[in-house]
Image (cartoon, rainbow, N blue to C red; front, side, top):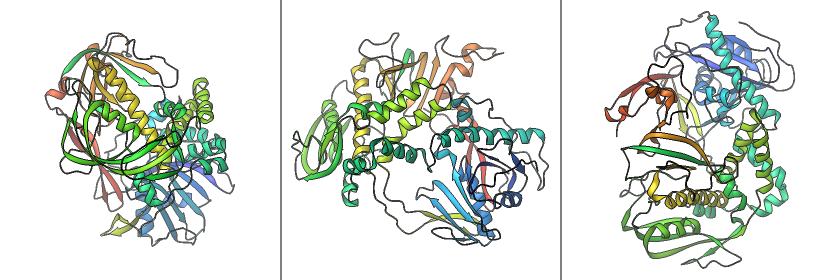
Amino acid sequence: MSSGLRRSNSIDRLVADFETTTDPTDCRVWAWGISDIFVENTFTYGNSMESFIDYVKQYNSQVYFHNLGFDGSFILDWLLNNNYWHTDKAWRKGSFSTLISKQAKFYSITVVWRDTGVKTEFRDSFKKLPMSVANVAKAFKLKETKLTIDYDEYRAPGHKLTQHEIKYLKADVMIIVKALRQQLDAGMTHLTVGSDSLAQFKEICGSKMFSRLFPVLPNSMDADIRKAYRGGFTYADERTRGKIVQQGRVYDVNSLYPSVMYDRLLPYGEPKYFKGAPKPTKEWPLYVVSLTFTASLKKDHIPCIQVKGSPYFTASEYQRDITDPVTMVCTNIDLALWQDHYDMDILSWEGGWYFKGITGVFCDYIDKWMKVKSEAKDGMRVIAKLHLNSLYGKFATNPDVTPKIPVLKDGVVSLVVGDEEIRDPVYTPMGVFITAYARDVTIRAGQLHYDQFLYADTDSLHLLADKDPDTLEVDENKLGAWKRETIFEEAIYVRAKCYCEKLAEGDYEHRENCENEKECSCAFITHIAGLPDTIAEQVTFRDFYNGKVFEGKLLPSRVPGGIVLSATGFTLNM
C-alpha cells in the first residue's frame, strides 16, 4: 500500500474507486484507491475489501464513488456479512443506514463502524457529475485521462498491483477529485446537483420570497397536477425513418430550459380548482386540465401526443390517430399545441387547476450562471451549465421517497421495498409548465421547417438543409437561440434515440493513421440508447442494414460478494 498523510479535521472528504473481478463464482474487490479531495498527494491504494474498510474507519468522512450503485453493493455485502444492522439513521456502533430510492438509485450509505465509532458516509459523485469519468476529464479540461486495463484478467486474492494498474486506478480517482473539489469550493455540498441548484436559487430569491411564491401544496393536489408532467420531445420523422438522407444540419437551443424559465409566464402561488371546461382570466391565465378526446393528425404536421398507461397505445410512440376516446391531463401550453397539430374532438372536460402567472422570477439566477458560463474556460463553465440545466427538474421532485432496503437473501444482497415514505413536494406546477414550454419550442420549430424536418431530441433539430434557414434564429451564444452544432453529409434516423450521422469533411478531427478517412469512426456521430459510447464510436451506416452484433455491452448481476458485469452482444436492427 502507498499512502500520504490524511487530515485530522472533523470530516474528511475523499474520492474512492473499486476494481472488481468479473467471475460470478469469485466476486470480490481486487483493488481500491482513495484520495483526499482537499489535500494533495494523499492517494492510497490496496488490494482487498478488508484493507479498504480498515482505512476508511479511521476518521469521520464523506467518501464519493462515481457509481455508488455498483461500488456500494460490495460495501453492503461486507456490512451484512459482518453482522452490521440496518436502521433508518445510523447512530450506534455497528449500524448503517441507506438512501436508496424505490427505483434502486443509490444516493448514500452511512456506517458507524463497530470498533472505532467513526462515521463514514458513502456518496455517489455521479449525482453531482452526471457523466462518465472520461467525459468529466474532458469537460473540466483535466490533464488526467481515462485509461484502460484488462478487466477480465484473473487476479488472485492478494494480487500485487502493477504500475499500470496503479496508474489506471489513480487516474480514475484524481479525475473525480479535481472536479468535485471545484464543485465543493463553489458551495455545492448537497447530495445532488439538483439540490445544489435549488439552494443557490433560494439564496438569490430569498427564503421568505420562495415560500410565498412556491407554497407547499397538499399531496393530493400535487398528484393531480403531476399527471401533466412530461419529458422532452424525441421523434424520428416517419417520412425518412430508416433511410439514408443527404446533406443536413443539426441545431441545439442554447440552454433550452433556462431560456423558457427566463421570460415565459410561469405559475406561482396556491392554485384554484375549477370544474368542467377551463375559462382562464387575466388573474388566472394558466391551467392544468383533464379532458377526454379523440384526435386525428392534420396533414403535413408532426405528431406530438403520447398516450401512456393504456394497453391500446405504445407509450413511446407519438400517435397520428386516436379513434378511441382517451383521458389525459395537460397544461394550456400543451393543449394549444395539440389543437394546432390535430383535429381534436373534445368529448368532455373533467376540470383542473388555475394558476396565477409571473415572469422574470428566475432572471437573476440565470443571468448569474450565464455570465459564468460565457466567461469561464475551465470547470466553472461546466458548473454553470449544471446549475442552468438542473434547477427546473428539482421543482418536480417526486414526493414519494419510499426507500429500498438492503437485505441478504441466499448470500446475495437484495433490495426490498421499505415502508412508504411521503415528503412535501417542492412546487410541481413549475416543473410541469417549464417542460411544456420546452416541448412547445422544439416542436413548433420543427413544424416551421416541416419540409426539412428529420429528427428532434428535446433541445435539438436535425434538418435536411445545405444552409441555415432564414426562419431559425441561429446564434452561438444568445439564450434561447439555435446554435449550429454540426453539418453532415449523410445520416440515418432509425427511431427515437437511435441515429447515425456522417459529418461533412472538415467538421471532424481526422484520426492519425486512418486508412480510410471516410469510414473513420471519428467522422460519425452515433447515438443509440443503451449502447455504450465506446461501441457506438465504431458504428457506421452499413451496420444498421446487416444487423451487426457488437460485443461489449455490460450487464450487471448480483452475486455473493457484490456485482459482476458480464459482456453481452448488442444487435443493431432497423
